[in-house]
Length: 90
Image 1 (cartoon, rainbow, N blue to C red):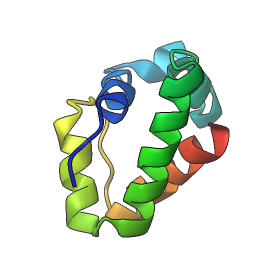
Image 2 (image 1 turned 120 degrees about the vertical axis):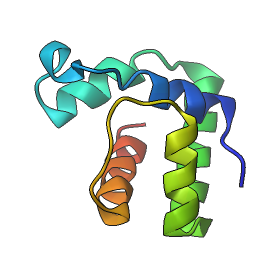
Image 3 (image 1 turned 90 degrees about the vertical axis):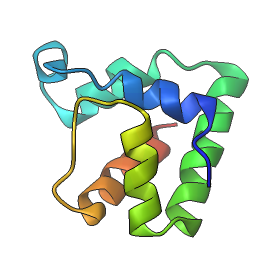
Image 4 (image 1 turned 180 degrees about the horizontal axis):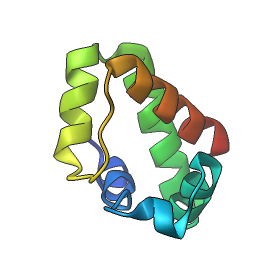
């Protein structure tokens, strides 16, 4: 599985010190997802949904690493929970 352009963009918004801009997880989702509109938002939701259903934990971790995000997850389950929350907000 290859990361979609929308997913790469999504991950890049999770910058160092994002917690200073948006101190809660809901705030982080809002801060990042406000940058996605229309079809781009739909494609991001579809990609996250597909990745959560089909990707192994290792593949999901690799996909996240490709985004160059500045936040990391202690376990694959934590990452899945995070992405599930993002998908639900889309």
